[in-house]
Length: 212
Length: 410
Image (tube, rainbow over all chains, first blue to last red; front, side):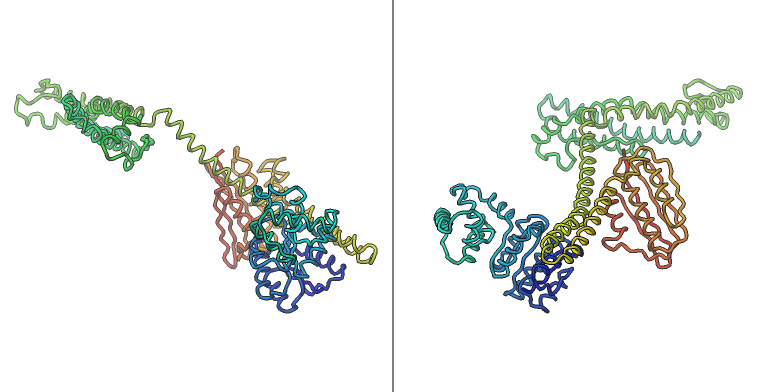
């Protein structure tokens, strides 16, 4: 899988290249600023881009803007954005154009390599990966309607919002596939959402409901 | 001494001016008071309050010109006093300054007026007596008198009168300043804000400076957050990522794992260096140990370019000012040794009242610029966080001069 990395911190950039190339990814370019990143994406047409939120010149949300732009120019590109801290507004900006092939994770998740790689793979396949902390923030804002759900249902909803499919949710919660199905049906009924079997539509519906 | 006498005379004459206005206003008050007994006078009270206020303002302005500052005590500025009778009456009653203005008016219109008249007339009559021998025998016989209508009709008596006049004049040199002070005393006591109001103003001022301090504090916190975030935190993130990569590579490709561990170690070392830098930026240890002037000594001595240091009496200063001063000099001298090519540098640090002034000068090639991320931009950011100013002059060919002023009221 071909990857482009955008990270302004040289050591961290090097670390990401080391990690991903060691895992069999083909890191075709590693850029240090938004302009170089966009040029590399145009040139190499990678499958997925890993982008840091803070980049020059102002070190605020350049990475988000570059990711949104790259996604607009190359809709088939998957983008995983890394952020040093949870900022729900960043997720909102990032997901404004749709949830397919989008990821937003805290930088430190990279240290949990298996989870990071599975999130990256999910995003590369056109899925979604939203950081659990972001989901927790979204939950906190919609406490009232979510109180109607059982604790287990809230867990399932959170994992759906993170972008996991049924199998992954079942694995994570150590329950059967059927049980997950049942929970999801119940959640959608309680929240008045129309259920879809397609995971991408389901994630979009859930995130939309949570106010992204 | 003579000039002082003239100044006092001028003060007394000016005081006489406001006393005259006060007298007219006082008479008007008495008339309005009489009209109040008939009921109609009440309508004029707000107008009279306003007139009194404007006379009092004149007296404050007069004293201000003489260098005596009297803070305006009114609750409402003139343009915000309600225009309608009821509102104006309520505003006047609510304001402690109204009654105090009136008391001042009564004293100044009488005592102040009298003192003013006396102060102006006495020098005139002294002059008349001094010059008496020059013109006494030009007068008709019945007008040949001194100021107190004492007939003086002989030469010896006329010359004696002149001496008396001199005596009076010398006495006036002593008396006039006292009269001027006496005349201004009611204003000082009554036209300033009531002591209780003064206190609340001081509270307002303290609140203001406290807000400024908090702002500076917040800016400082932002700066620390920024350097932790962009520095140490990123380095540690790199450590986490490379260690993760090393762990994954350990079984498959040991050589790769060793390389990753090397990178992780380098990143960890950099993180430590960054943290040291941040700590030094918060409070340089040497500053805590030796105070500002000792710390500056060490910086100047450590500079690779010969550097002369002049430190004036610094007195007690807030720690934030000392830290910023230290940082300014250290950063400026780093620039001097790295970029300027100078043969010598000069540092002057002196306190002038409530301002700490820092000048760093070198004879290098000039052309220094404040690019973002440069040491100079860092100096400006820290100086401005404390409401200070920084000026940089660095033409191509040199010399480079950095001037920083920091407010340091302690």
